[in-house]
Image (cartoon, rainbow, N blue to C red; front, side, top):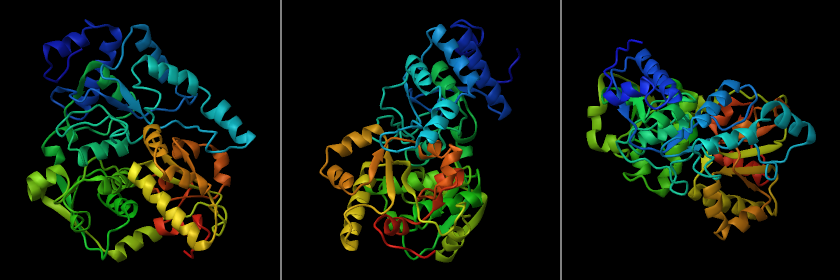
Length: 431
């Protein structure tokens, strides 16, 4: 087959099957994918640890299982190993009735155990490597600035590009694994200097730090897949990405990626490329979007309520989509405990599940706050709330969340953090 790309000798050898038929097919897929987007060459993946988006053993994914079986048959693995998105099930901490379990086990995720065995065979890092926040230090899949990645999870990609200064396109499932196996990805889009320039100047003129999830939602719905350059947010967040800022940027980016298709954002005075290049990152024809308090309220008020009964009492609350950081777990524990003290309650009024990666949960268990949180009746889980809400039976429940990603992809109802807290601790909030 004739390719338009300038390919190296090693890349052509891969295509010719010198390292096996499976690698040849993986390389061919990546080259064809890149040529669709005008890539002129393939570049090495410099951060060898991949992150896969497909973590759920749904029966319909037969081509996926067949492809991985072919990798296993030829002894092919991802060179640097990989992490993968969260597991869809956790019956111990996210209770389900018998009918819900039947749907999960027989219809939705009946291949989960088999699929996880496949993942281990082709390079899964370890049994704890199931999380959408692989870039957190507790998990350890942390690329350096300038690294080229082979990742697919949208919230992880936007964080790696924006906060860490790595380079990765929003790949689809299997392309992330193929890139990790052959060690190359096509160079286009966010892998190029030109592709990382901003088409939007977003001016934040709010009176206080905006809720990350609502600000990200506003930006994502406005700029869609373009790159925004955000001005005015550093006056609230400062000029250093430390532990107190990480969670905010994680949630902001996830909302831009799910409510739009943002793969990279720059925050003036804070994120690495914005600090280095400043307004040079703005394209000459960049459009402007001003966000003030009124605009945030307009965006918030636009969210549809998918509950059958708008005034229903919440049945379940999910906090942590994407997975929470250790700092966020500590903060939510303190807020829930203080809120219960104020209302005179000992237990949460709504079944509440806080989700985080297995490694973050392990670190949290070593702190005194673990007993405080579990004492409130709230539970910790490594589950993916999105995968839980894929079960159509869960639509009967009034599920609330402070995650714009979960709101977008499910019937869960979005509330601001303060509203979520009030409902958890037994206060009622009028919308």
